[in-house]
Amino acid sequence: MRKGKVSIKKKQKKLKSYKFGIALLIVAVLCWLTAAVTTLIPFSITVKASIITGGLIIGEILFWVGALLVGKEVVSNYKRYLNPKNWWKKGERKKHEE
Image (cartoon, rainbow, N blue to C red; front, side, top):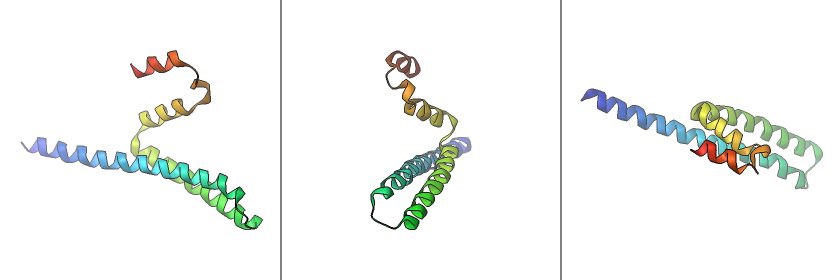
């Protein structure tokens, strides 16, 4: 009976870290987008450079921490999905889904 309770707690803890990792990946993408949008804002060059640099560095850190939390399989699936070479290949996508 004790093993059942321990495994349930372990799964819940793993699920929380997985969700937190996904949230970190989403925030990382938002940081990268902030760096792109900053070029359109009428600030001085030094302020823009600071915001862009900070956004890229924070985005990279959050991405790698999130990748560690969600695991290798999820990150490799996202990489394959986001690779422009695979966008128009329907046959290969079906192979990976099955």
